Image (tube, rainbow, N blue to C red; front, side, top):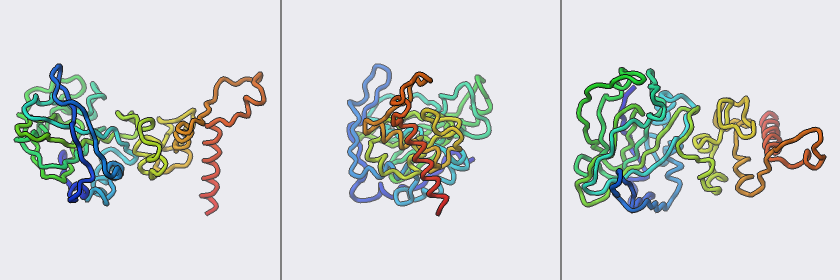
Length: 302
């Protein structure tokens, strides 16, 4: 597979910015780099559009999605979506693999994680463009699990124009470069992983209820709200599901909405001695199963 591909972001090229990042905060060891992270989002749709690879926001969204489907397999999910900034003169980030949580296991045939790096400003070696060691994923693969990597070529700075999306292998060594300018250099990194992996960001808890309410089936799936037999079930709901987008018997949106409204009722200990009232409670699991059956019946009748 190609290790680095560059595409364009439509929305970042507009005169009035949809996304504005200020006061980004990072630290290295005991040395403080910045004070805090502050996102000023005029239109939150851009983040949803990037996660969905919607061509309305990402010019090559369909191509990028096809590439991710081929590399990670259909059903991949969003691992995280983070801002990464650098101020003048601070230390470079330690070179690392974003797929390192799987260590010491090294996936040989293909990565289990692919990064989509959204670049809203010109980056280069002067302002701390991301450091990468081209081809280092091959050294990692050759070394195998717990193997010795050996000597590596020197790192180089990424050079790209504003509006670029860079895709790179999760086994590629990279890190934040040194910024020699007076302006903060920032990028937005979205990591994507195979469907069976646990996401870094716990979207099920952190996403705003209003976004959940209006989210498309694809977005819900990318945020891990589509259960499958191998993971993501809630009180057993989702067992038997394959994890496909908008699969009726795997959508966990019902549980999240019940949680947000304060109406979530968990199934506790039940026995032959349980009262009729206890047995007939409006358990959320019962409601989710009922809703799924109704939707399946409605779909079959069309």
